[in-house]
Length: 64
Image (cartoon, rainbow, N blue to C red; front, side, top):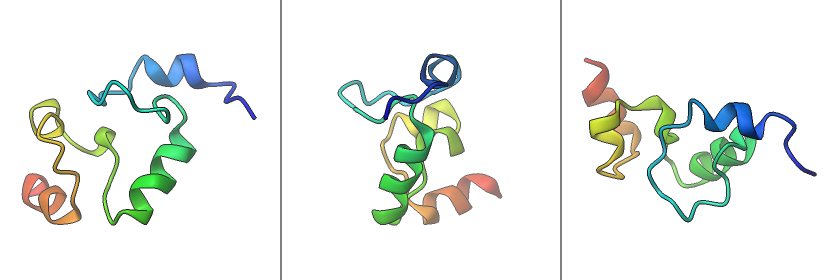
C-alpha cells in the first residue's frame, strides 16, 4: 500500500541516508528502527542525525 502522506512527510524528513526505501513512510521507518533498538532520524537534531548513531543512549545524551 502506498502512503498517501509520503510527499508531505518528505518535506520534514531529515534523514540523510539516501538509499532508504522507508523515507517519508513514517510507520515503516518507526517500525524498522524500533526492531533495531533505535529511533528514527526525526528524533535527532541534524548534526547528530548525520552520525547515523540513532541509539536510544545517544538520544538520551542529546536530550539532556
